[in-house]
Image (cartoon, rainbow, N blue to C red; front, side, top):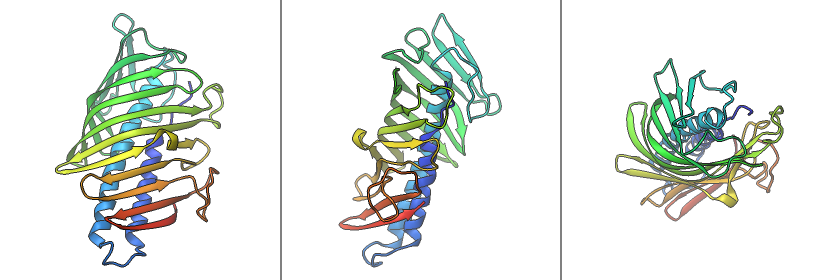
Length: 277
């Protein structure tokens, strides 16, 4: 299996860059979109992107080490110590330096790349990446084939730079392209869709990616080439929508570039801009 690459890690960088642009380049009248509103959206997006990034790294580790018996695969994470018990079908991924671990309890023999409808439970303990520490559990369902998928459903507790939050996810992680050419990384592409809820104190941030608008990123491109993601502040009537499938002029395009269309909404006011990421 080829090394998985976290799509969500890239999305985190993209979202951070985009919201910073919006907060610094205000083209609406200040009375319509207040500076504090833009600042709140920026901070919310940063928190959300940190959660997406860390969860994406955990999913990447599961896809890399929890699907087959081949422990020679590489990961962009620190090299973990991986064990598999063929009697209990449990995979344990231990990160010796940080002390964190990911335990996968499959309902049957360790799945191979063509297995179908293999379910399991994942327990994450003190998994730390980029100042985010994850604890919690979720259910997963693996389906192999030309586009293998991991369906994820559960709740995680996050500590991000000392702040605690709760992260609920219902996501599908897809190996979108390149699975059949195991020795060629250049044609690899990964996709993500589904929903997540990030709760910090009294604030709740919802991120939605629809299946027919799934975000797709190829290894040969620094940014996603298509897909739409929408982050909203629950109960506040404000949101940020990102469309990756445009060129610098805003025309539909799935070519590799660093442009995206951003729509920020605060109440009835909205602003749409083409952003160079």
